[in-house]
Length: 636
Image (cartoon, rainbow, N blue to C red; front, side, top):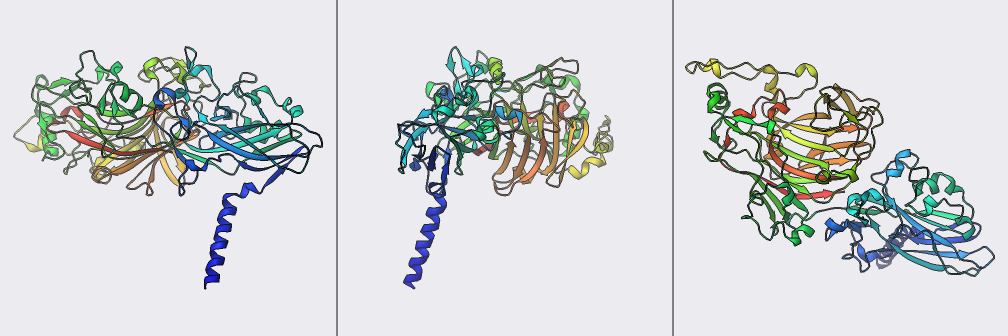
């Protein structure tokens, strides 16, 4: 029995050692040298034993410097070390030249696609450095150790659009999350001269475009170079972002009116230097268009937790005179930190829409916005946002939103432009009308979950439901207590999970359309709706039970944003998500610029959502706060 145990343990160790070091025994050769033992990351102490090669982005000081992988807090010098061995078989004493490249594999275009120049790739920290050189090696049977170091950082090609006053603002092109591969290239001095300058130095262009080194070495002329070994490691690095929700909330005074109050400031919320550098989120101050004014019934009620009914709503709709209505626009905070809390002990963020008082009427939006942008990623949010329907299935007027928006709007966003729309162009502004001009490029992008009480628009025969106007005979209940149309009744306890991509009406995709159009993803049909050709967004809706999404202790919402598709998912657990929306680049223009994450509870004007069974104007003001909690955010 002991012998069997020894053999089992020995065999298990051998298999573990072999599987985890399989590239150590591989020898790759050319006519001038042999290589073996390529380890793209040899400082193994960076990783937990059970995590594989996974590293979390370090948010310390990343707001001003951009993310560095690894950071100076994760390794002493803020670098990965790599290692390989080389043997000179050329017959003459000489040195050899080598370079290591990295590329994000999770969010890339195939190397043979012309758009692969957009992929996130780089090499040495000083991007102008070309190939490094080994010492002079004698031609014999001995292998010689070669080691070096590199890091993954923002703007690895030192692109000038991301500079400001000669300073490389690397945060403007942050590293992407997901998996990274590594490519080692070793060659001789004579062959080095055959490698184009744009490959030796990733900062350089050829014919006005960058050339992806992976394309060159794996699929193009670089794959046929003499006296050269190109080694793409099987070992991958996985990068995950998990912002600390307890690191505080920064208040950006740029977005506030001049007379804002600081009475709610604390060490966890404010505008001091520490929060400027370390907070992962800001309080989001909504832009409010004055044309979205409500003319609201002068009623304060606890709609969610009270007894407010459809009959109460219908009474409000029928019997308040125009001169009695309260004219308000959706409010934004003039007392920052009052409605957003970073709970440092429990590592969560709490937001709440504040109640109203007679004479102090308000429907106030509330939310937080991330402070570190990314291009692409799988964004997963674990949260308990406010319920939207009460037990009578009446809507409280709130829209729960989890959305991505283009970074840099405050400074014009010239550094953060989307790829050109080469057919007709984008609509110039996201708020403009049908007559707005078209332009070849824009910085505006937005990908949304907007969850509210409205109706589906597709198939088109379901829309619009026809609502009967109420009578004014208070003594006849039947004249004013009008039931909703029959076609809305199947959705009485449902809310709409609206999944939207703001493509700014770029008609370049081959299946670009308007009205209702279907797309299939994994045997599931999704109906896309665009109002007309120049409408700037396309939306899909799934009708979901309010108690399922917001009656539980928490729920998961996920936006997976890839270069060629967007997938929206929801579910009770991270491993039990279902697809709620899907679009790809054949039907809509997928943004490729850098975006920020917003989580908000806000008051939408129902004119934005025609056909909604409840109009914002007839929904009472809040009698008590509506709370939302954000427990975890992961970007993978």
